[in-house]
Length: 297
Image (cartoon, rainbow, N blue to C red; front, side, top):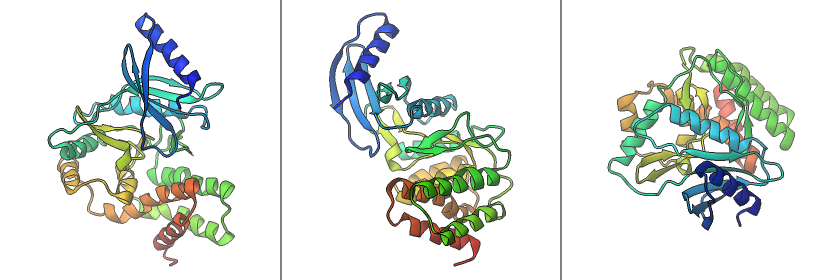
């Protein structure tokens, strides 16, 4: 059930925005998420998509809004980025984000548009790796301090940091910690020094894009500037991207022939994040990957 406090704040915000009293007509639950609550909100000023959580970091939805703004700034003609209407910090009222409602639908050549659009997005560049603020992949804090070298950023702020987060929540053995420590020191030998900072969605599995009447849309981002191959880590873990998608992507911005070798390393961050969030057998897969790259298998 939608938090009444959140609905009151939304009504107040929309009424101020439009200069007249806005009323909520109905709310309709939307499924699909595993962390947050979501609903479609019909009001006298239009339809909106609302996501909220009463047990999250206070700035989680503000950081999501920041990612969406940056994705929209990239101006990729083939992708739809939902407009952020309002984002609220968690506190006395649950944290929430209110977005324009995107009506599901299908357009011609939608997979090709998604591929071309993502390739265009990855050409949107910065001078360094990182982002304006730390943000969240799911509910996991990501450290995004700007860094000149991609290998340093990935080693310290992705693999090293998430291993430390796991250690705080799900204790690792001394041998397991040694395995990941060896990998962190090995990463500069694995990743190319020629990597350039590209804007990525950051959590692009098949549940975080949708087909709408206006074309393919990106949702639930955890954006930052990274080696663009980082994007493919989670994309290749669970499937959901067709051959037509990959052909269209490579037509616009061809991937290096060696990207699949590095892909397993980039998957590791998301495997570790899934272990942090959900536990289970993800740790065994993570250790296997770390040992593969350190030659200790």
